[in-house]
Length: 605
Image (cartoon, rainbow, N blue to C red; front, side, top):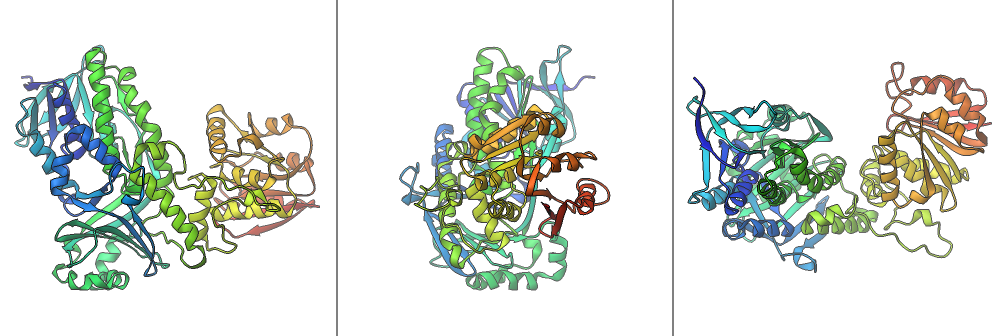
């Protein structure tokens, strides 16, 4: 017997959390019949964790007709305070941003938003909620078109909802991708955190406070209402069991060592069982649309909390998706091409923020104090502006925290132009400042970039050959060091890699100094005439035998041949072989510098 058909609607939304309900409201308001399937998607992980709805997201709430209901429940927040080793180094306020859509943000939990959105939809005759249902499969016709979605009710009964478009908005990205036949890949970062809800002491300010300590302790505190605080404690990835096994008293002491004022309210916490545990991993789906299908919000990507965009981005997704879907339904074309307008509009922005999130500050990241505080405060102000203003601020630059180039002072090396560049800094301090200056979130080891810049400068480098196919930030460092009249030739094996390299160097403002060559490394080397001052080998695979000898014939006496990641996979893959070649080569005087995965620097005799 075929499954019963419980409903026929225009659009079926998988996910009953805030993004799915926001989209459902937008579609119902547009006169479309919409069903939401799924149960308590927030579950036990949404009651304590608080998000900040930035002023830019309030515009999305306005477009969705949801702002009034949210503001009635949420906590107004004036901005952010940042503390380093107990000293407040920045007090950032929305009211100080002339372009901000509102002089405040809103603090809210996911569960609170969900309740508000459900209340707004409760009496809408075009809205149906199959509470507690679970998805089994998408239903496709013989021609590949979408017929509907097969579900199981909370009582275990199978049923079908017929629809023209399915939008998956929440849940595990890999599971959503499997349902849609779409692969996912991780964003290279993973933190973890514990979140507590505690009473709010009298007089606690209406701001979110971020506390950093130089031993990598991280604490975030924000009012989640007039009488509650949301307290997030960052832990190293993979250490939750260790933290729990050490006992709550040890954890309590650690938290209070950062913010002693919490002592009076932490007494009601019994232990780690009163906390939510969050694994803050990131991912991106390889594509977001198929015929009759669209992924949005946490089904398409996950960027927990970074840049204050965790709930903000999905709200903007809902506005964009509703517009694209309504256009597709009106045109009777729900193909991947038609729905792809949503991905073309939203994906570049999300990938931009994802790249930053992969190197952003959070649990396990320390911010510097002391002599570099001025530069850090400037970067924090730029980041705060991007957070507050929303998508367009992030879309306009790959580095929303980056400063505009400074005018070169007479007699000053223009490649040093950056805000308050310190002469000495720890690696973590360098990471905070160098990424903002570089305009690239992809620098795997800022210390390597700094050293490459210095080596190029002291050796008088003006002409560089970069064997390419790494993240590309080293190319930018070397181009800066070579100066406006210098030239960097970057080798890339294919057009895709070349396009990424071109985008990076253009974004960093050194595109005019960098020529991208598309072929294998040896062919690209032969295509350029003349000698080089410096050659950098940081390719994805072990260079073929004999490439070093070819390169050295083109390196001037006194020039540098440098291999990055020299110790990575030694004896198995990558640069183990070339490192041995460099030490065996009599014309090179080679030194291995134990920075990151090793930097081998050879001077041609």
